[in-house]
Image (cartoon, rainbow, N blue to C red; front, side):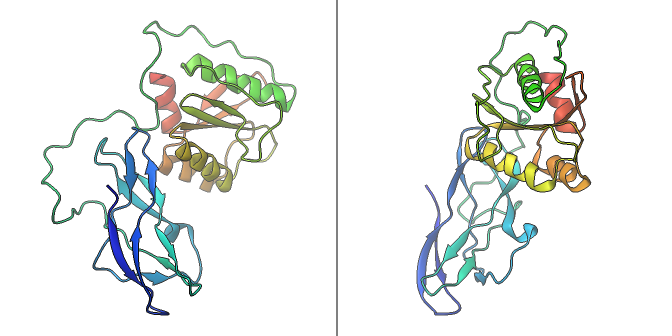
Length: 243
């Protein structure tokens, strides 16, 4: 059950009862940021990436990840940032936790494929942007993702490939993929409880790669032979374990 806390707007002094929004954890459990009752909400006058995200731990799978900072819009026009209990602390009513449980890598869906070893990947030569998406789709199927499809027309979300438990974006341009593209892909995966995988022909900007490492988004680069290569630890992990 979602925890509700009383919140008073410091501008108009109006009282509210606020509950943090619930999002699905990749393990399947509904998860809401634990609100801090004693702390005073702060009006948002300007936004930064650091302030817009908080670290939340899932009590079911013990995963820690970045989640949207809970916010409350007051009728007076003020937007309030509602404080969240820091990871590592527990509410007075929470039970004392035992030893940390072993957990699977969070960004990889539960195994659903056969036990047989994968054959060698057979790439397709990339001549057009469509070829790049096709090559990425074949690679995801080779990793074990099933029913991966690509829409005839690229959606506004930028998601080029989608399947059960997976969303992927393919950047066939000559510019390194930027931070915003990685974050938007991750949010699309978060909203559908899916793993997020990025493919790029020109690599990644430094801040995009750093953020992907923080979020656990596998990054791959492709050359014109159509053979993706992992460029960060989540991608290495995905290649070594499959799904």
